[in-house]
Length: 187
Image 1: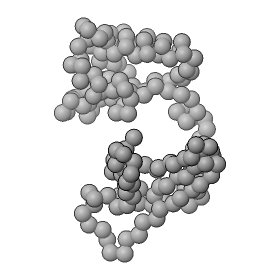
Image 2: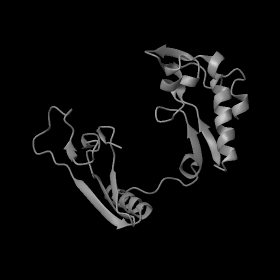
Image 3: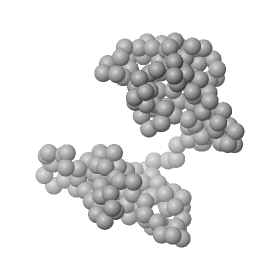
């Protein structure tokens, strides 16, 4: 896939035997971007073209981390950033760090944009509640252990602004049209 500007993150390159290299910013993460063309012949890395002004004497550090194996390389990169910023590994008790979950935010397939794209037609597609239960059942039958489900703010009643929920009015109850059983079946 292509890297596109501010949506990009660290780049991992690997050989057929998984010798790997991570290239990323070490600082100024929000202004440093990566981009590649669709053919994979060009790769740009640097300050985003969206940045109009930089303070004089600004510096930006790029880090290259090489190791054997993709996972080992990513862990090495993570440890380097932790040492640099003098931070520790997050709490291992956090469910979202240790268990596989199903997300419905902007990065998920069944997200707000998907539901609007099909016109929120519950008569032809069923309710999101039914759809998500079917998806969880399908994953269960594939022996994929989903431990939790993240339901993004748009699944809840609230004030809609430009098609998105900007102020949830009741986190405990899903929108009746989307969740006729008030999420009871999803617990």
